[in-house]
Structure formats: C-alpha cells, structure tokens
Length: 462
Picture 1 (cartoon, rainbow, N blue to C red):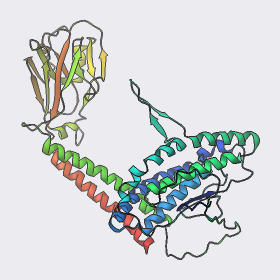
Picture 2 (picture 1 turned 135 degrees about the horizontal axis):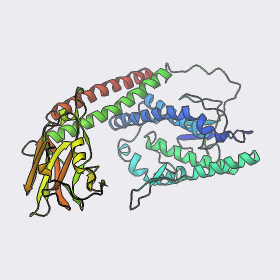
Picture 3 (picture 1 turned 30 degrees about the vertical axis):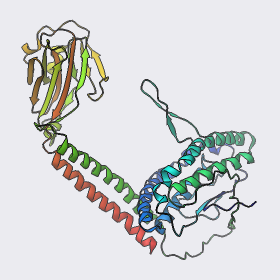
Picture 4 (picture 1 turned 120 degrees about the horizontal axis):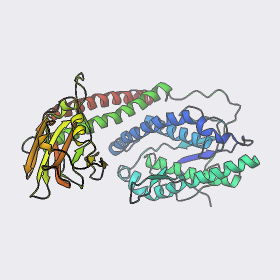
C-alpha cells in the first residue's frame, strides 16, 4: 500500500565517516547559527501573523512570506541535523534560506494555491494540540515548570530526540559508527516535529499524519539528490529573492514590530490607569497590604529618588505621595513617618524592626536589629520630613525630593508588636502625557517596522 506524500518533505542522508568526538564541541561551533536563528524566528512569528490576516481575507498565503518562512524552517533543520537534533553530518551548515543541493539535509513545503479561511482561526492552536503533546515528548519542550510549595523552579526535561542523539553520539565516539536504526528513528521524530511546525505556521491545511515515517527519506515522495559535481546553480526563474539585505531588513522590521507592541501596550496600561483607576482625590493607589511584626517598627526598604543634579528624578514623575496606615487594633495609636535614610538608621540603630523589601509581596520581609525598645517615642525624634500619629487611619502626604528615604510605621508609644493595614498612592500628574508619548513612540516604531518588512517583501514578490 503506497503512502501519499505529505506537503512538507523532510529528507536527510547520514554522512559516513564522521569524526568520533567533534560532537563534543558542536554546541560551540553552532553558536553563530543559533544567534541568527533567534532573530529569524522572531521574523517568522511576525510574518506568520501577517500571513494569518492575509489568509483570513484572501485565502492565500503571500508567496514572498511563504518562501521566507520555508527558508527559516529549512535553515533550522540543517542546523538541527548538524548539531544535537540528529548529529547526522560534520559538514558545517550554510548561512542561507535557500536549499543547498549538495548539503545532506533538505526541507521543502509545497506552496498551497488556496487555504481555508476558517481553519486558519483554529488549526494553529486548537487542532494542533494533540500533535503538540506528541512533539513535546519528542523534543522535550525546553523546560517544564515543576510546581512546588516553596519558590517553584523551572527544571530542564530532555526530549526523546535528545536522549537518543546522546546515545548515538556516545556510540559514535567509542565505535566510530552511528547506529543506523537510531538514525532512522531520530529522523522520523524530527520529520513529525517539522510537519507540525509547518502546519502550525499556516503553510498547509493538510493535517499532519499520526505516523512515524522513519528513515532519511520521505515515504511515497520522489527524492532527488542533485549531483555533488554541480557547482554553478541554474539561473533563477524569478528576479531577486531573499538576499541577505532583504532578510536583514525583514528581521529588523519584525523586531521593531515587537518593540512597538511593548510601547503600545505600556501606553494602553498608562491610559487605562489614569482614566479609570484614580480615586476621588486623584491618587493612583495600591491595594491595601497587611503587615504584622512582633518587633518595634515596620519600615520600607530605602527609597532612592536620585541626586539633586539629575535632570528628572522619580519624585518628579510620581508627584505627591500618600501613605496610609490603619492599626488592626482600634484601641492602638499608630505613628507613620517619612525620614532620610541616615536619620532613620540612627534612630532605629540596632532596635529590632521589620523591613518590607517588596511591597507587592506580603511575604518579602527581612528582620533587622536585635536590641531593646527605642529610647524615645517616634514623635519626639526630630528626623521626620512628614509624620502623623493617633488612633484610626493615619495619613501622610509628601512631595518627594532627591535623596534616600525610608517610611516607618510604629506604635505611637514605641511599644513592640506593630500590626497595620497600609496602602500607598501617588498622583503621577503627567501620566496622561506619558501614555500619549508611549503611543506616539509605538506608532513611529511600528511604522518603521512595517516599511522594513514591506519593502523587501514587495521586491521579492515582484
């Protein structure tokens, strides 16, 4: 029974007589390719988004973008075949998107005349999920998050391809021979992964088969391996093509497009915050946090507002700051103050106190000092720039200036055991202008990126 060829053709030939131990340093030799491929895959993602909308509107994948993305897959396959995706050759991969007839690894994707507008909405995520699970076993997915109760790490989990390539490499090192059956199995898994990559990249509507087609050559497809004696390529039937300059232009355009999304996203967040998140007094306020310590004081970490020579300091951007603290015990009187770092450190000295090192994380605290009670009540110490004390919610507002500052919350009588709910806010008067500037910067960067993508694409298409 013959097998119909899949539109994605992945072929490779195992090189005889490979070096026994060159594989130990191929990770280093391949670094230039990994560097280039990082940017090529950024461009691949950007051009796939453009292709998505083109298919949705016209049902066609722009030919210039299709050629580029096939070239990225082809380049990636050559590097994987040379390095730790297969270790099938010692011949260094060429730096080109085009097919190299006498290189032992090849990839081609049949250009689709028409593509389904409906499938483009779901095939790259929903329909491909079963294949993603299989490919994840093959390639390992890089890292898997192993959630634990404390500070969960991200742990590397090797894929089946990596394990089998390691076995093949060790065998090659000690015997001088690459096990043929391992090679066929590794090629089958790589072929499966590349078919899924092309399908998820919107290059075909034909669903990848759940079939491990092992061996160096595609089943059911005609495989032509050009003679290595051919040194002069035949003239291209199309003018231009993806020259190095056009590839660089497209890659830079794609990177600028991603940067512009960062600007536009930040501008959107700033606009949303300034228009919807201010309270009735004009402050942007954090959520209330609960803080408790058995020691004598709660303090912030040092707040650095820059030097007097700075053109713009954080204080210039934040406007007026407001800090509020409410004792959990209504009968308690609480003190809240802001003072220079040197004065606060002199007052607290070795007195036990809790430093809040991360306001957003209620658990990010550091205990400091082991001495007894403070020698004076906080209100009697003349180090504070602003302060307030009493029962109920206490509030201080402050126009920050350059310098290093610390916020302190204590019981008014300087007794141990401080327990409060606190929040902080700022007016950030120029937030609207900041949002507008971010939108403008994002629009300019996006326009430049579009031009850098459109110009080479137009020339290739021509």
